[in-house]
Length: 191
Image (cartoon, rainbow, N blue to C red; front, side):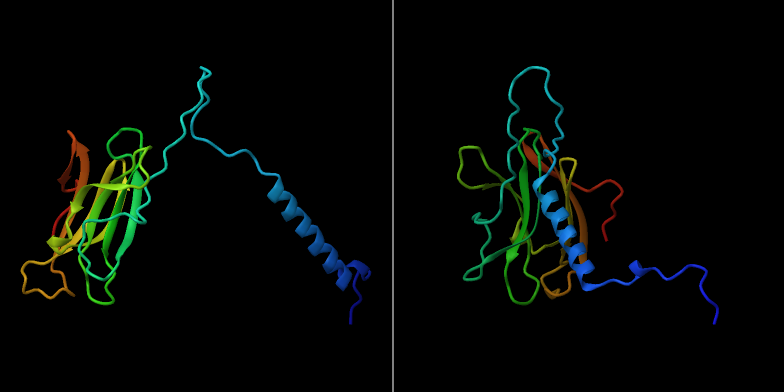
């Protein structure tokens, strides 16, 4: 057996006390880093005039909203939600995709726009983009650049089983002239 050119080093073998010391040092660093935090970042640049910045409005929370959907004894389930300023007023709205919380099957979706004024205690529905009575399911839901987009799955007739939608449509809604206007997204093709 060939001898190593480097003599054996004592520090290459760890002892339990070294592990305890390392764990204590790491715990100290973590504890110190949780106390020493930088100031929160803001996207707004400081204003040259000395006016205080207006607090950003919180997006409406769909929890507890009375949605115009008939579910009988079953509760309403918010499947998806997204928030953004849809009407350009500087306050965010929330768009919620909801359905009845049925145990099985494919219950239809409703898509609702929520808003909440500063003096209101809870959000309210201000627009219905998809009515559950139309028997549509909503997929690929998004809110971007002031527009709501979604893929809508539906049925060509009442004879088509609820499990198997046979119509696919792409939809886009934007706020124009005081109302949400539906269009087909550019580059989209319906099936």
